[in-house]
Amino acid sequence: MRAGVQVMVEGPGHVPLNEVVWDVKLMKKLTGGVPYYVLGPLPTDVAAPYDHIAGAIGAALAGAAGADLLCYITPAEHLGLPNVRQVEEGAIAFRIAAHIADIVKLGRKARRWDDEVSTYRGKLMWDRLIPKLIDPENAYRVYTQFGVPKVRACTMCGGYCPMMLVMEQIRKLETTGGAQ
Image 1: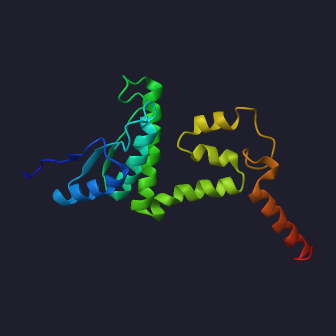
Image 2: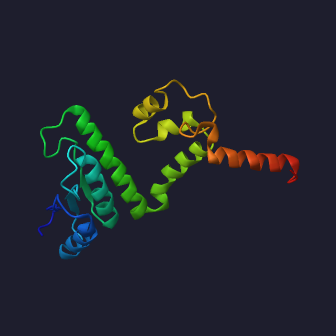
Image 3: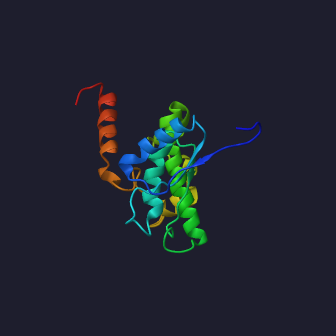
């Protein structure tokens, strides 16, 4: 390689899930660790118009195995040209995949974001949690789609939330000194 020349190897776009890790590791070994760029990879060909979801699954695995750059896939992949919303959906799906891979590759450094969100979720601090999500605008739209929730619990379980019921029992034990 000549001085100043940048090299990147482009990988395949269609790889069965059980071969994704092998492909990444083999290519990194054969190239001496040159940055590896994967097109997805797409682990199944039957997911259209959900190739962005299938591709994000392959991308998370490829990234965790050592792929250096993930090329996103849109819902329109293999069917037609994407519109703006489909490009956004593909980019978000692959941003999630990249973050999942970073948790494996970078450990605690990447996990801090998840820990912060988990803390806010556990404390039901929706106003702090939603801005920390990958797509805060859409998260808020979903959170308020039936109006602002009035239950001080997860919107899925409401007053039947197992975590809230356990916490209620713990608070009762703490206030009574352990006696029931």
